[in-house]
Image (cartoon, rainbow, N blue to C red):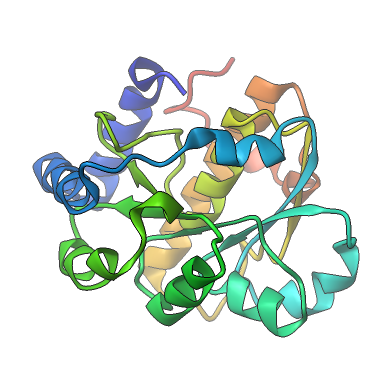
Length: 232
């Protein structure tokens, strides 16, 4: 993802939620300092290239979707989806998280050598300081919503789930499949509902870029707000 392409979408997100760009940038610098001078080896994610990648979301449907994951599938788990996957004996090749739910799982995975894409944003700086120093830097891929810098990447995406999809795209996934995604979950908070609406929009943008139709967007495309997206 070229930041010049992402930036207008990012600015729309900032405006809608009232987030601070300066705070995002400060978090980006914080995680960079916590991991310095080490840098994540991007070659470790070549495991995604030319593969059918399963992106597991943390929705309530995930337990019922587990039988859609094959033993040979490459799996990225978003946030607490990883707990459900591990409990079912399903390994993940990567976890995406902003540390707000299950830092113990993050520690559990890095002990196994599994890479973790940790997202730094304006609201999680305290968590970054609490968790990141205890992690082996070689297993941490730092990400940001703001402009990338040395040691901190921006592949696009907003929630843990759609960031996982954008990351899989960046590393050459042949096809993306989605399990555990519940955009109409009535149990989530109003702000989470708005974030899920953005996840729909961003996945639509991604499928358009990839010239691929994501099954998770079936029966949703006609209602998607395209105004902030660089699509026709």
